Amino acid sequence: MASTERRKIRVLCVDDSALVRSLMRRIISQQPDMEVVAAAAHPLEARELIKQHNPDVLTLDVEMPHMDGLDFLERLMRLRPMPVVMVSSLTERHSEITLRALELGAVDFVTKPRLGLKDGLLEYADTIADKIRAAAQAHMRVVRQKPVAARARLAEPLASTEKIVAIGASTGGVEAIRQVLEPMPVNSPAILITQHMPAGFTRSFVQRLDAVCAITVHEAEDGQRILPGHAYLAPGGVAHLRLARSGADYVVALDHGPPVNRHRPSVDVLFRSTAAVAGRNAIGVILTGMGKDGALGLLAMREAGAQTLAQDEASSVVFGMPREALLIHAAEVAVPLQAMSETILKKAGAYGHRV
Image (cartoon, rainbow, N blue to C red):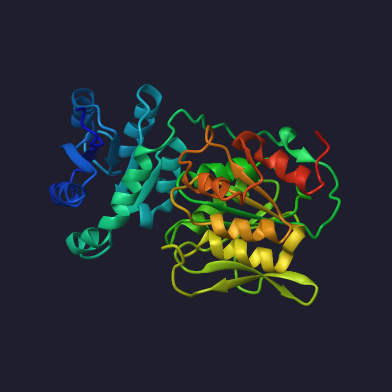
């Protein structure tokens, strides 16, 4: 009788720290569904080990001898694309480096703790394992598009300035959100975004988005008035983002309560508040990510009369969150990422033609 045991996720760890390599081996070896097939102290060694072991997932440090981790990642994605999770002490202090790694094709990232490396990393064991599992499911065939030229942005006067777009994402969402926001015209509906992201990263992410988008992108602040042509991103690791009203105006409400679905900010929190406050004047969008966060909230939006969309499987880095939303009929339709901006504006009654 053929064995029904599932093959373990094969992981190659690349880090110049012997302690980190040892800790990663310990963390991964404790997981029943994964194993470390090899560990490398620098990219040149890793290159040979990749050929030898053909790993499913690579964990990669940034600052290493012989070759910078980002240089290695760029070459790897060009010559042999594979799922990569960045693990580096640089990522929290220099979030620009992390965002660049995600642009180059890394699936996700984990930050080394500032103090108490051994105990800190061991406390992150479940998070590291979850991110490796998500990376193992990643669709590396996804083509990351170049920035959209200004002339390709979508434009048409809005039918209503009261429309609200709520977007939720996790693994793979950094690039997906950029691709959704970049074509949006200056008169697009207001957009609220929850992306699963730790503290210290959203400010750099917002700055990068604001630099390439026609709309204005903010890190959301409590009490901030919500306006068309603006996007508001939940502060990572700090607070949930809720939609609220102040008189006739939509406003941001930040909720510092406990994590929901293991996340703060949580997509479900954003979607449920949008359902309650905006009802049929809202459009809900769930993008790439692992897990179920956002599915029930999107269902609440649909039941409140909102129009709801999910990113399709082919364009998702990880199809977990969109799949869950589609399974419970929370999302009306699955949409390719490259068509998401146009579809949102059509749903808002705002799209007619390209200019």
